[in-house]
Length: 118
Image: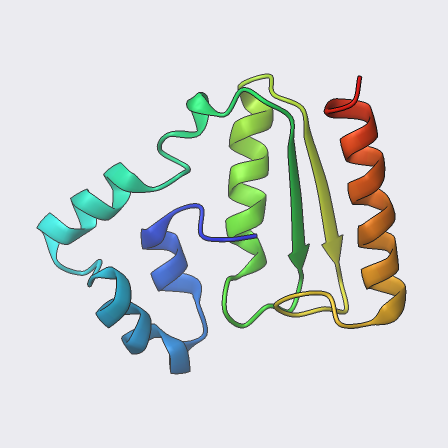
């Protein structure tokens, strides 16, 4: 998964990455930048997501905290859009373990069969 809210992402990403991400995305501690980041965040615009969504996330991701995935899953589901959520408890940024990568492949295939190929 990616960033769902730039402000919470910057607040919750690993501390050793935070300053570099602020250079990249903007410093959420500045009020004008915070307002801008909130406005452009996918979470703020989640009501526009009307097609089924598959979210894949590693619980131990140091780059994008799993809470980013959970925020968007909750918000999109609240809007009535179907969301499939796959979280691997023993993965980080990307699925590296064969059993997880295989499972992700099968889930993705099933998701596409049941949503896109209906």
